Image 1: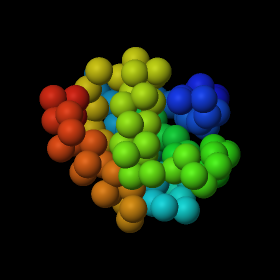
Image 2: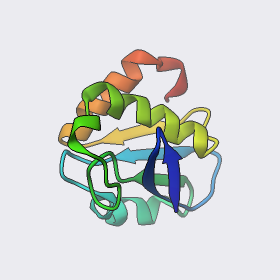
Image 3: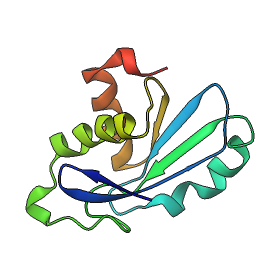
Length: 111
């Protein structure tokens, strides 16, 4: 599904159900496919959400609209659009930097 985030069409997938949610953020040139093998078994007991961040995969964004701040802001925009009040945030490679910055900005939103 595509979410309208800051005027961009952000490709997002959500699968599984459970009392807890994990939101996954890929590396700089990664996309949702990087997480499928990891999230598939977790989705048996968790709600799992993954999205293609700005400029990656199915989320086409002009390069000048991609910044560290925008990537962090998009974490919260995706969470809000998907009805995620609090979650475990996962990231790898450049996505780990975005995840850490998001947690430092709003620690009360993450487990």
